[in-house]
Amino acid sequence: MAALAFMPPTVRAEDAVPKAAIQWPLTYLKADQVWQHTKGAGVTVGLVDSGVSPLGDTRDNLLPGADFSLGPDSTGIAHVDTDIDSHGTTMDVLIAGTGAGDGLHGLAPEAKILPVRMQQEDGSDPVHIADAIKYAVTQHVKVINMSLGTADTPGMAAAVKQAEAADIVVVAAAGNFGTEHVIIPAAYPGVVAAGAIDDTGARWSGSSYGPQVSLTAPGVGIPVEDASGIPKTSKGTSEASAYVTASVALIRSMHPDWTAGQTIRALLATATKAGGASGLQRDDAYGYGIVNPLAALNVGAPVAKDNPLLPGAAPLAASLPAPAPVPVASTGAAPGTSATPAQSSAQSSPAHMATEALKGSSKAAATAKTSLLPSRRDKILAAFAAVVVLALLLWLVAGGLKRRADRRNRIWR
Image (tube, rainbow, N blue to C red; front, side):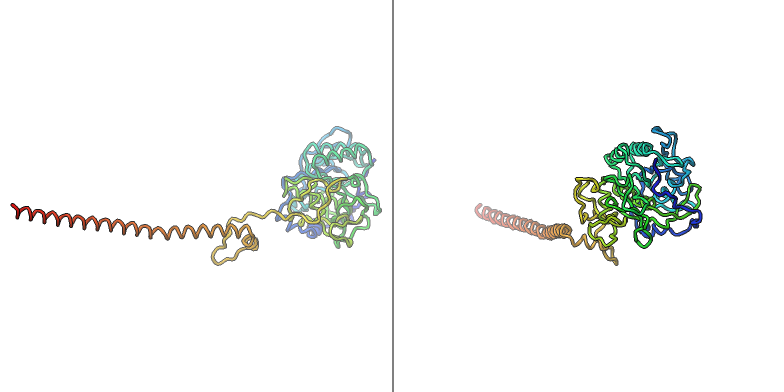
């Protein structure tokens, strides 16, 4: 039997907080700046969990899902008040909560959630989880979130490999045991295993650690809602995995042409270092660091496209390409204004200078050509006038000679 990674429960009634409470993880992850780039539109998240209740802040992002909690065939959709456990609803709110009414915002509020239920109230068999993963794959999701722990079986391992082969980023919770033991499926190769930190950036003592940890994210004192919409706070690597999943959704929304491997590479290379690590160093407590979606959104496409967490993958690059420049409608500043830094940079580039040189040469040639026209016209007019004058002179001479001849003829006669 399997249990969710956050069990024993870390959401308690005495932790109830107003819905208007500040969501510190959104501030910590600079959501206001992230949302200037993207809010996750166009990306579907496969949420393999306990189902999702259609609350005010989850209803609008829910897609018809499936329910494999009773066997290999779905017995219905996963969002008709079936979330007895509340765990799946919590994950939805943190990933893609819309903030409708007085609800909460997720980090990717415009992403869609495909709820795939795989457990009843007392947990689930790994076979049910594997079936849920396979269904999510058939629905062409871009990322699968599994904030759960289960037994290591050939079927589970095969289902995760199938998702990875389908270019899906798989994110899972590292576990809440506080020991050097990352749980399944987070421990599988290629899976982005998420550990938890508090609001100071320090690793939560209950966060499991080990060589499989990829990233850490906020996971302590997190404002959430249960399946009835009651506000509470919670803690755990489940919450951390939700923020990592949302970060993946943001990147895949902004870069739909990136592979799952490129998405993972961007997140690992731009993570905020912690625990004394630097560069691309990782440690077992924080992985490659604390997820930094804003930094990941501001890099260009990683050259290597394979998943760096799989054996035999290309090394993780220390520096990523710069993002493609945004086209500028006009390079000239209007009167009384100055060029933007981007324009100044573009205008100082060799390519721009060469282009301007060509433009200058063309303008000079055009000016020279224009200045030649009056000169040529004057010469033609002068030549024409000379011909006219010469003709007139010849006519006068001819006339004079004729008159002289006539006089001689008269005298002769």
